[in-house]
Length: 168
Image 1 (spheres, rainbow, N blue to C red):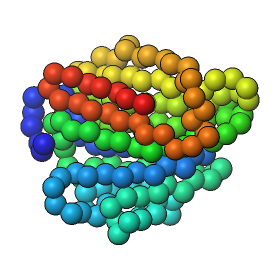
Image 2: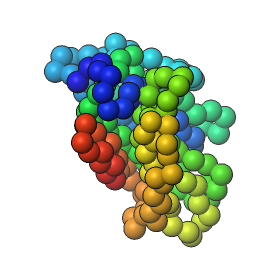
Image 3: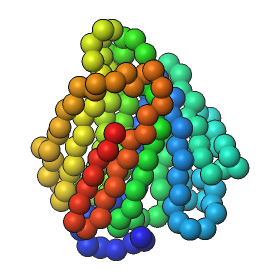
Image 4: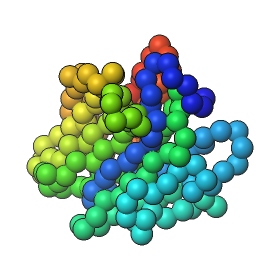
């Protein structure tokens, strides 16, 4: 599950979000670990609270800041899941993103979920995207058939050498 140069260089697990509450539970390997052993805060550390003895985090968000974190190691395959509850009501202009990307300056690889803001009464839209070897243009938009602001929902990215599954 660790560093390898084949397929894509999916390296960092990043979360960018605004005006939403997210509960992240992770299991990087078989050993017990805390969040700070496997991840680094990229911005707004005051908005990330460790819970369950550091085995999970809760992102505390307000109107002034989002927050982000990245893995300290690179992963060739795996699964990452987030429990996300979107902000209710008129959220036009707000994009909540849960994504992973390569850690290179030359070629970009990326897997992501982007929850697009909406107008009150309109369906929420999730957009997925895959960049491989710097090429994107694989966006898919889905109007959600449930209210993602009513409760927490789990969204996952599962990837290996042969398949990428974005599941919501």
